[in-house]
Image (cartoon, rainbow, N blue to C red; front, side, top):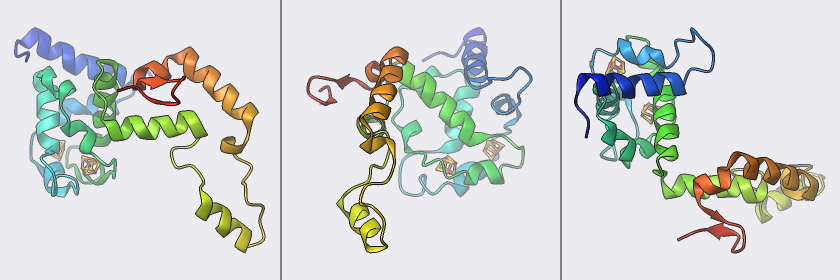
Length: 184
Ligand code: SF4
Ligand code: SF4
């Protein structure tokens, strides 16, 4: 756990840099405007059912407590954007949580459920692949059973997998190409 002011600044800066693709973009730097009112936690549907506390994550990020990057809680946000809409300080909370997750994933902390979703993208080209029910529904309204999507195009899937390997996304989620499944 890191508490020193220099390192605190580093974590907040890391989050801001990682989440700011355009110079001057204030989406993630809005982190600094948080005054800890707790409206985000009070609005969070996930926090009602889990140990996840949005305000605490934002506070830890501001204080540079980098154990937030090892936390399971950051993966419990459903990205519903309620906190984002309700924050009285216009802190872009959901974008900040996503940026923290990106940093956490680079450190090797990614929730299994998110790895599974990423694996679907890798294997089928979609986080929610079409299935038997989808095929039946399409057929019932006179459409072909298979939609013209990446899932049913070897060429598109090959192109996607080339990009995925080039970017190291397969390694990030721990995908084993031989088994066609996640390692572990
Ligand atoms: S609602 Fe906004 S200002 Fe209030 S604690 Fe959450 S992020 Fe901070
Ligand atoms: S976006 Fe995430 S943190 Fe914000 S209210 Fe929804 S679940 Fe909670």
